[in-house]
Amino acid sequence: MNGRVDALKGLTLPEIRILKRTVERLQQRVDKPAFYDQFRMFTYIVDREFSLEQKKWFIEKQCMRALKYFPNLDDPETFNEKTNWYKLYYQDPLITACIDKYKFKDYVAETVGERYVIPLIGVWESGRAIDFDALPEKFVIKSNWGSGSRHVQLVRDKNALNVDEMRLRTSSWIQPWENVYYHTFDWGYKDIEPRIIAEELIEGKEFEYKFFCFDGEPAFITVARDSAPGVPNTYNNYDMDWNLLPFTRRKKNAQYPIPKPELFDELVEICRKLSAPFPHVRVDLCIAEGRILVEELTFYTTSGFGRFDPTEWDHTFGEPFILPEKRILDHSDAYSRGPLESELTLQ
Image (cartoon, rainbow, N blue to C red; front, side, top):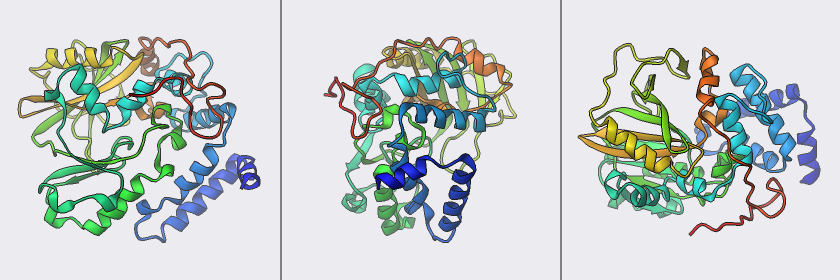
């Protein structure tokens, strides 16, 4: 195996692209490629063997592809550069707990109150263990370590659900090669213990409010129309005075004005409390039927590969992101093989 891994690490970029296209063609022959992602299994085997310099090379390659500029990871200035530095050099077990969509509910409840937590229905270690008969007619099922809409299924009618298919899908979500860390080196995902959770399906929300917070202070807001899987979305970006900012990022702007929410001050106060321990975190909230709910905490927005148009806004978003001292928590090499041996233990 080590010889094969060394050979794979020695591939040139054109050879990697050819290999990826070959794998993608093979996947097209499978009825449900999401159930058995061969390319992610490949990256899991290879990426965990990468040295720090190889990880930096991988990030530089992805930045060139997505952002169209070569990142400075030693002296970063833009938001995307700093996000990638954050991934590589700042390791806080609280980040891992807050990325975990199961454990982070405790953090939210303890920090701002239970009323802001989306109610949990169930948690399981595998798809085989799920008792679908006991679930309500409507719910959301997801993995606790998925990123964005990955590993999320909205169930609006349980009677229409293919239970066998859902068992296989959820069991696939928690395979080790599905860990985001092995695809983008988002460190906070690395030590999450995978789980499948079901929670209340939130209906009646009109917008999602994503606050970019730095050292406990919100600075920018992205307002999303709907981030549900497969649903067309829009992003409007605002400063803290609710001025629409003249740039786009990944999604088009809505073609209509979005009103400042009546509960804006409460949203801001929640963000301040939740983001206080961190150099940077994006706090995602929604308002549904008059109640504020915390949807998730995001530490590596678009994994540091989200292009701003115009690019100058990448610098503007980077200005309030003051990087901390490097924090590597294992006793030797943070990028050595095997599980991370942290100096701190999650309680």
